[in-house]
Length: 523
Image (cartoon, rainbow, N blue to C red; front, side):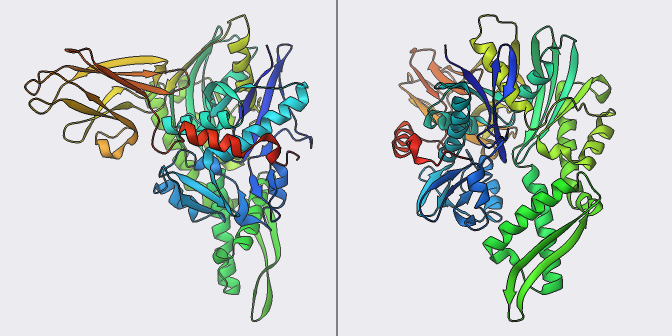
């Protein structure tokens, strides 16, 4: 059997790992870096660039360089998250044929799974160069709070990249596997995962080769990008006050601000003050204008205080679902590059009443966990049992616009649940089953995952027919739904595939349009 790799498909950076001789190893790319920027670009001469090559030219080619695409994957075009993203990124986001968000880079339109596939393919190439043979199977991580649509899109990306995804695993769970590698003590741990674009918190119980997720919560639109944006807005406001020029209409200037903000944020994790110096950032009738300003750690903390508080409120909800208090949690593990921020570490320590554990690399721990899960799935010995949960409640829309929950959030997967419903009209011959995911009692306020019609119901007075609706969630968190008329035995079922995901035909078209040699695969 060939090698199976673990991939952390991140918003800002991606990472790939493998298990060799029983030990997990993070694989460096050709430049010697263990993480690769999750960036893709179409250069001015039409070349396709990925990773560090894309990042190096992002300022001069900002409108054709895609980053942060993980935040858009599986989103509808008119969603609040897409609208907010469009206000900040230099590239153009357009409405796709499936009402999904797509990117226009140069003269070509790309789907979000397509760009994710390009990043996955780069990770695959890095692994293949390391092991010296083709790699066709992988375990890929996603934020724990990804819904079914976002998970489906990630699987689509794997298919486009030429990878068979054996398992989709939640990022905090992967981090827990990495932390627990070689440990046998029974512990209850909290994984606080704040990456570039998403935030997750998971409470897990570990011991004797069993990793059980007690609860998970999160925000798929809270991450380091938001911290960067606060700095960018602060710098732009300062420039308006001092030079009278608003840089928001200049895409290249804003990209320079973003790069400077990210660097300043990292600098302020190690020092109290840093200088941002951007010469020739703008020009007016007075000539070239320069931005030179100092920013302190205190300023950064005041700008981002509410973002940290927002994450801690999510932690409170997660602990309520797990029915544990801070004193019952033995370890707090910090995951994701943004957790290097001293203010955040202090806030998390105060919230949980204990200092976070620093024995793992926050940039690599998720990929290592994915590799360990890959090894567990393919090895003969089965000494690791992973019990994960579904992050959001699942159910159907019922009469009066209500949401009937069949599977509650934080239910261990895989799971199957059924419930009997009935008709609302006399002699009703068919029923439409609308599959929803979310926490609101109002159906319209939840995410529509898909719908289908069960036809051929035997005519009867309303309330008499018995329609059994069953939900089946597999270990990847992918949902299957069926409906059966008990009287006739007629059944209809679907693997939920929301409108904003790609059809098999579109996936095949993208594969044909993107052969492996279409990408400049160097870093």
